[in-house]
Structures are given as structure tokens and as C-alpha cells.
Amino acid sequence: MLTDEWLSKMYEQDYALLYRVGRVFLGNDPARESLIEDQIQETFVRAWLKRAALKKHPNPDGWLVECFRKCLMNACRKQSREWIRTAFSVDEETSPEIIDQNRLDPDTYAGTKEHLALLKKLLGEKDADVFLRYCVYGEKAAPIAKELGVSEQALRMRVSRLKKRILSNRELFACIAALCILAMKGGA
Image (cartoon, rainbow, N blue to C red; front, side):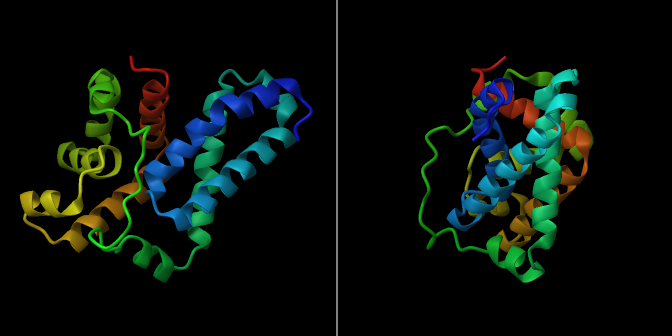
């Protein structure tokens, strides 16, 4: 247990945010929830080790999100390519539905025009739309793939590549994290 009260409060406040960001990128697969939780724990271990510098940091929440991004990227790199391929090719019709009571509301996103504009600028209009619809709004792959004229597998591969691109780009990741922060605080 953390003995530093300031860091304990930060843990209580930011755990849910980091968990949500992790679920946006790794999906609702129950097998991957432990990976998200492990990387959140790793993030707070690093925060504990650097707590003196973190207290002086101008944006400690931003530092946590960036540290989590790096931990998540490193953990995903350690996973085998086969595991990643099978994780993104789950048949939506046979997989159990995971109900997310805290799903991000599209209206909340509409209120954050600056972040959406940045996301569209950095990803491109079509890729940003595909990412938001599939990963954030929770639309099924079939109707999106049909609309785009591609197979469901091709759509999932496209989303997988977008996730990797977002994870490796600080501006994109910060944009998604900012959208999640605003959604958790009740919108802009």
C-alpha cells in the first residue's frame, strides 16, 4: 500500500482513467483486462519510485498517462504476434457481449471539438471516424466494413494498425487521453 498520501489520492483519482484508456486500446477482451491492470500497477510503481520528481512536475496526471502509454506499449511488444492476431480476429457473433455501463457518450465527444479536430488532422478524417466508431462508440465491425466496402477482417486489421499508430504517437495518444478525461469529468 502506498504510504504517501498525495500519491494515494492520485491513485484513487486516476486509476479509472488509465483503465478506460487501456480498454480503448486493448478492447473489452476479458483476457486483456489483466494486462491493463498490470500496466496500471507498473505505472504507479514507477510513480512511486519517482514521487519526489513527480510532485514537482507541472502536469502529474499527464505524466501518468504518458508513463502508462509506454508501459502498455512495452507490454504489447512482449506479446507474440500470433496472440495479437488472434485477439483482433475474434468473431463478434460468437463472443460474449461485455456491457460497458460507462461507455463514452458520442455527445461528450461532440463537445470536444478541438480534440476531435486534432484527431482528424493527425489520423485523417476517415481513419479517425473508423477508430471512434469501432473503438469508442462500440459499433460492430460488420456494418462499418460493409459501408467501407471491405471485409470485417480488413477493418479489424485497419483498427489494429490505428491503435499501434496512436500508441506510438504522443500527440495522438494525448488527444485520446484528453477525450477520455473530459468524458470522465462529465464533458466539456
